[in-house]
Image 1 (cartoon, rainbow, N blue to C red):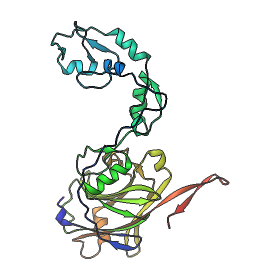
Image 2 (spheres, helix red, strand yellow):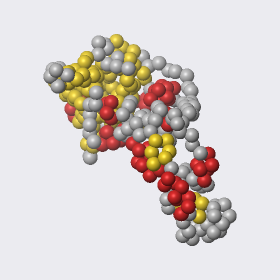
Image 3 (cartoon, rainbow, N blue to C red):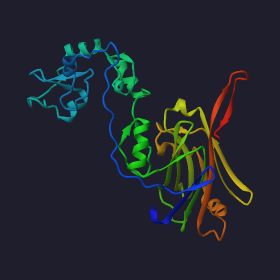
Image 4 (cartoon, rainbow, N blue to C red):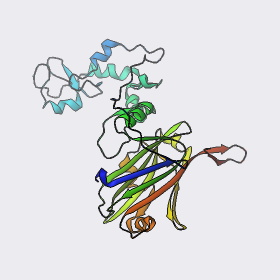
Length: 313
């Protein structure tokens, strides 16, 4: 979808704002941190368990050639059964001694430099790391195959500086989306806006795509954090004109769920094209959708055992 055919006028808490263009900076990776207290990794053991091809730690089965050079099972097929060190045929020789060493180790999570304090036996470590709350997040920007990963502060900076995403502070919003020819609906993201609310960051997506044979418009919110934190918040989206309204209320999805996964699950405000043109008013030739909404925090009422909304002032 061509960017010159789209206009977005944003207002936060009732005050119109213009997007601010910021200088370009590359996102930076975070510096390493010391291992958790009491963990002193043996460099020599870690070097023994490092695959010479992919440089990842080797897990059983660990293969070796006749000269004793080792590599992981994944890379064995990648090198066409030839030792990458001496070029001898690998065959099916297992390095049982190194496998025993691997099984006896207890290691820190590979995300210890990002704050994870956990220590695991060799086999349990892999399962934990696939679900570790300290693992980096993927860039939530849709519309490009961005490979940047990092913690939330670094991703916020990356979105602002590299993707030029609008940044706003506040828990209510009022966006107007304009397109001169709404019949040209393509699978493309229209808009991403980041909100700083309750000390957290939220991504508001708005886009047009084909749902079956019908073009639709969809708005939804994602939380920049884990799913268990996202459940502490709720949001509403509303579009309407002349007393007619469509309203969506829900819980923001974590950015652990990809943009496409959220979109394809239809977890948000979906507006059919005919309805969108009706809400646009006029002669139904130009899309002019005004989407309003708010974010609130659910607070547990200990006496009643129910959640009470805490509205942002």
